[in-house]
Image (cartoon, rainbow, N blue to C red; front, side):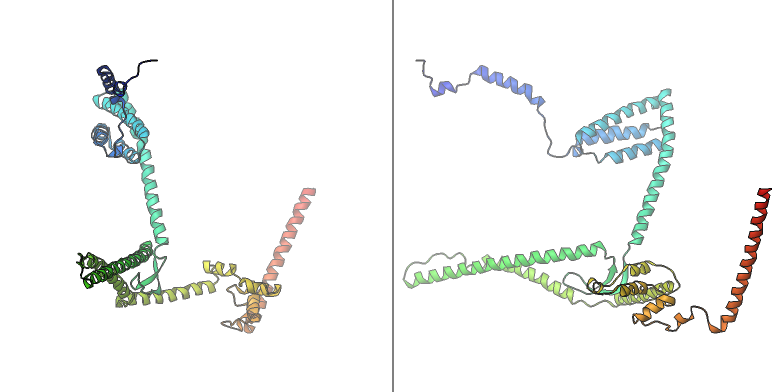
Length: 392
């Protein structure tokens, strides 16, 4: 049998082993990757060389304003990079440009000519970029104008979450966000108050239990004990928080009872008058025969499904015809048949003209027929001459 090793002999580390481990640690330590706790674009080791050496160096050595504009645009576009690999690639390219810019600034004719050609290319690119920026700005402004909120003349009644407001269409997002946020906040406060009430009841029960136990011990002639929950500091903070929440609920109730300011009432009434006038103008335009969105929308509508299901084919046809804006001719007949009340019930009978103008209309009709007959005969004679010439 071999010799038995004692525990202290098994785990003994010699000085040579410690020295070898130290040498390995010194060799590996510089190779260990150190990951910073903040993103690299916040580190001074990245920001100072990039901004003060590369960016300012490129701007100082740029031959003209167009190249400087391009450098600024490139840095604005690439400042959103978050990948270290992509950022390193762009920085290497930037330093390569800096060397070429410095050579041109030092008098190198080749790189000076290259930068001159580059500047001429940037002039066209800059004009295009300015045009695109102006176009996008105008389109954004037109989009805002087409979707700008307008007052409809209706009232947005005060509630627990909003004061009295005019009804806007479309409703601004910040008003919607305000209402949603206040609803959620009120629900959170309500839940917090319920929890505080529960804590207050628990503290009150603990106080009653201690008082009862202390009274029983005193009645038996035994020594009492120091009561904990009888002190008011246990409940005063809870009660103060409940009062604060109750004041917020009172403020909500006060908001729901706020009256409309006189200036706002005038604005709402003016908007309602303008809306009625605009609807009348729209109605008159429609009466003159102009096809509006309202006209097309009405033509696409139909009766409800449960009504459409029991309608005959003739009733469906009359309903489709009656959705036109006309009040004469066949449309008027269809509307009268459906029981519509027309603005001028006798107007549909005048489609052929008034009786006193009948002779004048007949005279015009005869003159038109005579002119058409002359033109027809002239065309027939011309066709006959052409055929004779071709035959000969």
